[in-house]
Length: 109
Ligand SMILES: [Zn+2]
Image 1 (cartoon, helix red, strand yellow):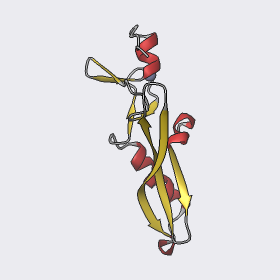
Image 2 (cartoon, rainbow, N blue to C red; image 1 turned 90 degrees about the horizontal axis):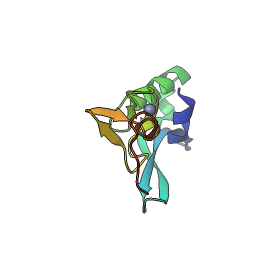
Image 3 (cartoon, rainbow, N blue to C red; image 1 turned 90 degrees about the vertical axis):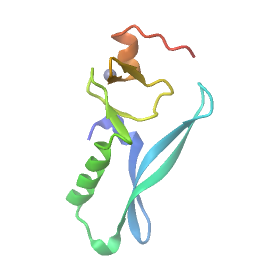
Image 4 (spheres, rainbow, N blue to C red; image 1 turned 45 degrees about the vertical axis):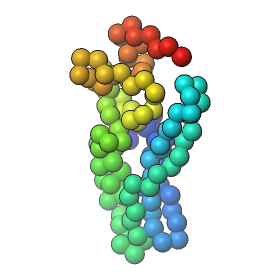
């Protein structure tokens, strides 16, 4: 898993199940954001799934464009909504860093 993405996905173990959660970032304004963990998958302990299966489930979520997009310049995985200004340049998803460094896009804060 990309190490940069680990802060946006986690497992939460409860008494009954393993919950796979992704961070939901809501922007209060351009400077302040709030992170809320949203459960996107529940796996009951009774199913006794292996570590391998859990990783496969996590990878499925990481490849879901509803939650994560890959920057077409640096190939880094980015959480959808991580930045209030996710750039779409020439129909591509470009992360904040690349938009600034490679395309000279200036973000007004
Ligand atoms: Zn990038």
